Figure 1 (cartoon, rainbow, N blue to C red):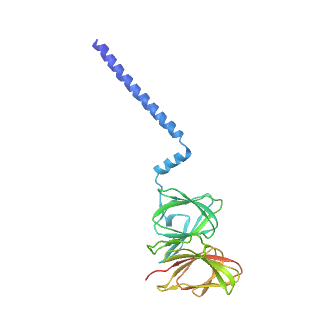
Figure 2 (cartoon, one colour):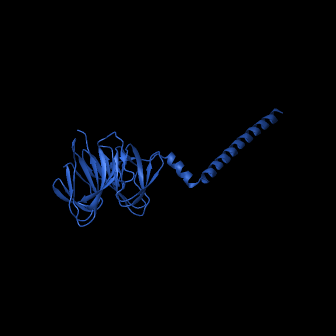
Length: 270
């Protein structure tokens, strides 16, 4: 009788072990089936949440080419091929970017929702630093810009001209009654100001960058090929070729074609 009870107990234990194994296999099968049935966007979100991206300094991101570095700014020429993207890279400083050519780009910040940008030639925008992201070129044309890091920090609100055609944002440049171009204020916080300029053929424009604080630092970003007299020296500038001066006066001489450029002016307290 004891022998029979032992056999029954061993048989019951074995049955329980088989039941547990079968249950585990069925649970694993259900989990795998659930993963297979995830929608593509669900898989993407899970992968993005689970995998922390590798972030490089901006100076090590191969699409960002350093072209100018001084006490005021650090300037990069950026070019991303069609349907390509940058590495995740860190922006420690506040910066301005000037778009060269129309673009459709997606900015993908680490830990935040991606944002699609429809950019036009000459679009100039200010961005607060302290984040990392990658830029994805969604178009069939290269995405090109000039990225200007601002080394001087000013804790002041940046006021943007939302309607750049409004009277308080834009004015005609005239000689007598003849219009020769336009000047547009893009944004300012009292220390950093971005202005867009357009000069028609055979017009001449001279700008003085002096203030009560002394000479300003001025970065010229041409949107077209153009001539500029900077510090008394005439230079031939290509579109996207940045030129920095603290000379106080810049002249755009008469030319035989329309010229367009952006000026980023830094009025630095002593």
